[in-house]
Length: 152
Length: 313
Image (spheres, each protein chain N blue to C red):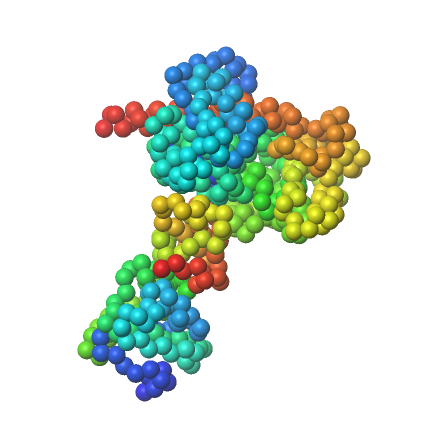
């Protein structure tokens, strides 16, 4: 039995997001819009030892599967993540996240003077660049601070 | 140039730039040949921020092409102060005009406008973002004085918030130009502009002292350092003073150095520079007319070609 299984119990149905960079688990929940009020069973493992990452986080959400746009944004803060769909205690699907070309409607632009922060009826749109994302409107680049600008 | 709008200088290739500048030369040589080219068409001058030079320059350029121009009047008394979104405003104005020039205090405003209308949009300044039509006239000025290759250009002043700087630096990467950036530490180029320069493989040479590089320059492009960028007025006076030039400063420069400025200047270029052969900023401002005529002519031509293609379908 591996280390993380000792710490976080198995789920019957839902999603296990594994190999999340240590410290990002709560941001993963933020992306998914989960704050506990929905009634899903949620288990979080933080800074669990990992062969691949050194330390990793794990998020298990019962009775909830992820949409493609959620996976897209997840890939920005957890590029190494694997997403396991679990049904009746078995992993029925296992996917690595892939970086999208653009991220629409999920991040807010940190530039207060950007037109997307001016009450216009538009969605934000960011191009994914080498090590971050870039606002399509004002060109502002977000790097390590992406998680702080998730607006879901 | 096969573009529907002019939003940012990063969208321009060398061919795009040269096509507009070639046409600007034709306009300058024979303005009469362009006089009625767009008679019956209307240009909307949408200035959400005060402007004298740019607005009058577009107004004059349009009229010299035979176009009528319409404006918004005082922003305080317009629908903007009633809380209308920019997306709504431009969609309404689209019905009144065949092309639109937009100046707005928010970065990205022109991108948004172009997404909401089908008439050509020219970005005439979006906050601290871009000012690409200024860049075309800057490039025209450089080209007419030096050509656009094998050049060393110094850009000095407020590189962080200066939209003319952001556009010029991006456009110059299309040419064989060594760029030097001279500014106080706190006003260095922003991350987004540095990213674009790195992407093109351009080298970023940054200095805090003009003397380090003055003797090597063919062009010195000076911009204004604004008081409101500094929390402390004393700090402003101390810093800004180091980036002001006068005729004596230029004693160490090459005889062929061209000094440019997007204007208005306050005290960053002393009046005694006007009397030197280096001063090119008034010529630069005047170049706004043929260049903006060439730009509007090109965009209107592209829009008409698009309409014909649409009709043929």
